[in-house]
Length: 563
Image 1 (cartoon, rainbow, N blue to C red):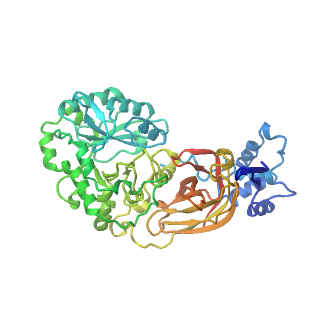
Image 2 (spheres, helix red, strand yellow; image 1 turned 135 degrees about the vertical axis):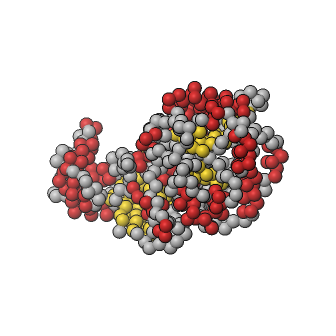
């Protein structure tokens, strides 16, 4: 890779010199500090791991393992067993063996089954199925209510869940059912579930659950969560309802990247949106449940491990604690935002014993999403997102669940478990606990993963990076590097500081874009990392595409320090 030529017109060409990846000045300075006679020995590499990389438990054997990984036969012509030279040291820092978080860590709109399979393979642990009678009323289909999606048979979805449930994690999978079925089809669903999952299915005793078992106790189990069986409500004509949705609402967050996520949104027509949600949830009240339970299908009701429902009354009743049983409460994104204004502490108190599920508002026909942190900072355990698309909300979700080894469960931070006068208030201005200092050294890999005219027809790309925090309102911030023109291997060497009041809920967002003077900037990669699990020191940070899939070669060299 020495020179690259771009055609400007029929008779003119532009030629650019292509630089190779070179260690930044700060890396060279560190190498000089830990090397002797141009080589870092095993002992000095161990000292570097402890002092710079903050791996306090690192051993000499860990340092030897790094050297050995770089001394494979294909490298023998340039590497020496005695230690690492500058090139090798740089190769280690910018290599796959130096990730930003520890993958081993463990703590005590098409309607089809394809999104389900992909979600499970990505570590998702809660799958929602909206179940309706099929056209002949003799079988059960899964489709998104109030939309014109193509239905898929429930049994196909259940079999896909069984096959892929534990492909990414052994921890339990919860299936939430939005039930729109008559009695005879509820009985059929119970039979399907029993036959499909067998002993894998977790079935509570006749008295129900007084507290939820731990994920560790439910490894390789499938749980069913739904409201108690109800009378069958005939589905309404969907086409008329489509026309009632206000123009422009459904495209609010459309676009190739999705709109910039925000917690403090200025909204218009919220009442109309909320009325839409309340109409959707009208069948949640106690009176309907009391009538329906008289005719409930016992084999169907027996399978419900996590009982759901709002109950009668308003927020005070919904959030009332029962010492003798636990349950799941579902709120739309708009209901949660409205409730958080007056009942933030009550919501957090409720989630210390019960489950809270938050779901997208019903008019998101384009599979767009909301900011999941609205749910997480109020203690919600199930923050449901539309997995069919992509955008910043899904990037943040994947970042949250990279924690804990990517097993699909993240331990709730202690700050959300405090009671009494110490109960957490997401909107309170708290003192800064720590400051995250981020250095963006450089990036590489686009030359290998993209066509040379992908970003710009007439010249190499002009990259810039965006770095910031997604978290509680006081911590949320994005910053940007300068744009480097005509360079496949940008060397920014820029430093940023982010004061964190609630680091337990903070996620480091990283994006790269290519500046385009005449059009929207091109996307160059993204990732999101839990701040609480960042490994201090200099790390190689692999980037992902818009769908969350890792690139083969694209990565950044960065440094993380808590000061």
